[in-house]
Image 1 (tube, rainbow, N blue to C red):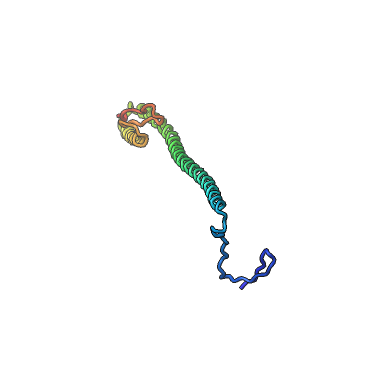
Image 2 (image 1 turned 90 degrees about the vertical axis):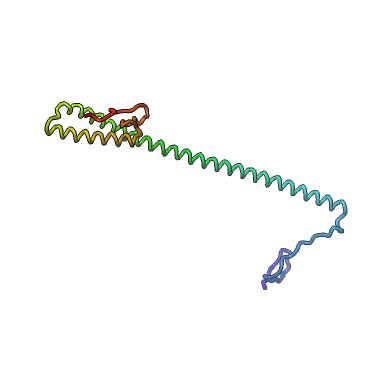
Length: 165
């Protein structure tokens, strides 16, 4: 048992297992007939107002949820697009550099074509083979067609249609 001091100034002894006090409800006979109906109507009005308030809060929360889901979806789409664009920029930069080298390689092969006799022919054939491998790889990686690499900007195909002989 515990001792407690209540607000009414009296000392009451209570038990932890004591049941909660029940509120006293006046029986319907003790209310004046008009007051009973008025009390019910008043309670109904209060409950309806509370229901309207809660329905408004629920609608507000639903709207916020729908906006949050839409914002998240937009962020996902934007992030995917930005990643694709960054990958494209990085690949384009590398491909442009490699294509410049391939163009210089092609010019060197054209110049070496005239003097391909004896040992120079074997060197030329080896370089031509490496050139074809480079162009095939560029074609596969850059999405070009017909053995020619595609310009990373997608404007036109670059390079020869076939490796020099």
